[in-house]
Amino acid sequence: MPWPRAVRLKSDRLVLERLSIEHADVMVNVLAPRELYRFTGGEPPSTEELRARYTRQARGQSEDGAAEWLNWITHPRNGGPPIGFVQVTLHRAAEGMTADRAWLVTPSAQGHGFATEVAQQVAMWLHSIHVQELNALIHPEHEASARVARRIGMHSTTISHDGEILWRKRLTATGTR
Image (cartoon, rainbow, N blue to C red; front, side, top):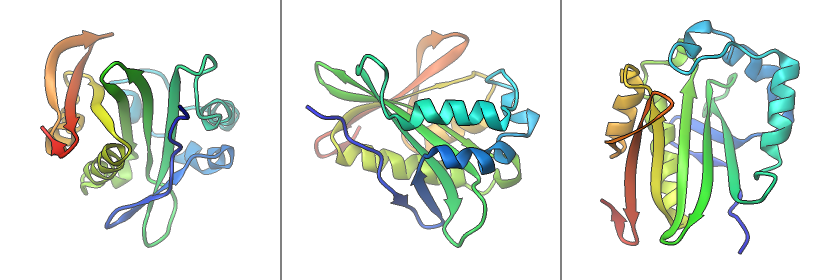
């Protein structure tokens, strides 16, 4: 069974455009603020590093084909440079597809509800393609990401991985629970 592919999505204020290698040139500025790495570690990528990363991610799946990668660049709907991204890794499980998600909004665009808006838009799309479970790993001190997760109906679990807490939302055929 083929994997779903990322499609262009729109919310009230944002457009989620499928990732391409060409996005590296503008995303390097979006990912430059060092405060973005407070909870995740690492440092801002160079344009060359970002091109290499986007080349792998734009391929759309892991080398063994066990996971599908869906990546979007987030833009204001009324135009302008990107303000962030959304990543989803799909896995097949006995009960259906699961989605591991991550979102990022550059500091200059934070505090306006953009992360919640894109996270909700992607959740609705994932539900439409019959994903059964949404997951996100969130650092226990990253309250802004925890607020986004709560606003879209995710709940923290007692499961942790590499110092981050697993947040989860199960989807049903008729809605979410």
